[in-house]
Amino acid sequence: MDIIPRLKLYSLLIVGMMCHVPAIAESGLGLDLDLNDELAGRPDIAGNHALALQNGEQHQLTIQQSGIRNHAESQQYGMDNLATIDQMGGDLLIYTNQDGFQNVVNASQKGQRNQLVSEQLGNDNRIDVDQNGRGIQTRVSQYGDSNLADIQQMGLGLRSEVIQEGDGLSVQVLQGY
Image (tube, rainbow, N blue to C red; front, side):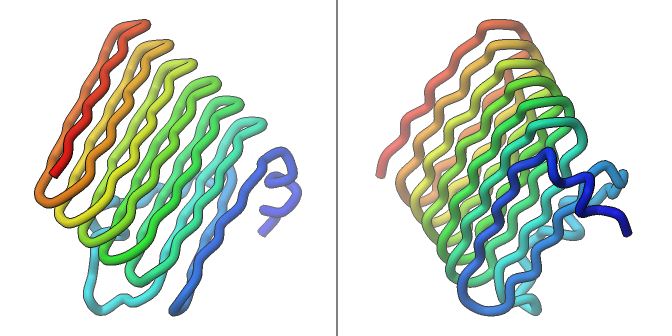
């Protein structure tokens, strides 16, 4: 497979600690995964798992995981998209899909069963999520241009879902204990 020459335009860093660390980085190969099948928390799998798909130019991706049973998938299409993912603890899951130009996702999760599903299909969109502990879930979708979603969730059974469809929209969700 001729993957290495195609990855030279991308900045890709995947860091995993503890247990085994399978990491897959593909570029422009058309690999399509079923999120529910491939990344769902499964007790028979131990370790950290990361998948990065990039197609386009000048994408940047950083995935840092520690603990057990972390799962992360990032898909970037278009040009100059940035994703930073940082996870620790339990059965965490992050999925992000960026298709457009200059989109940014910053996601941080700490413990237990956190989840984040993110999707941006326009240009110049930004998602910042900082989650903490227990059964937290977040789903963000932005379809237009220049949208901002800023979500912070701290503890217990919190849940948040944001969908924005126009241009220049902004939402901020803060939740506590």
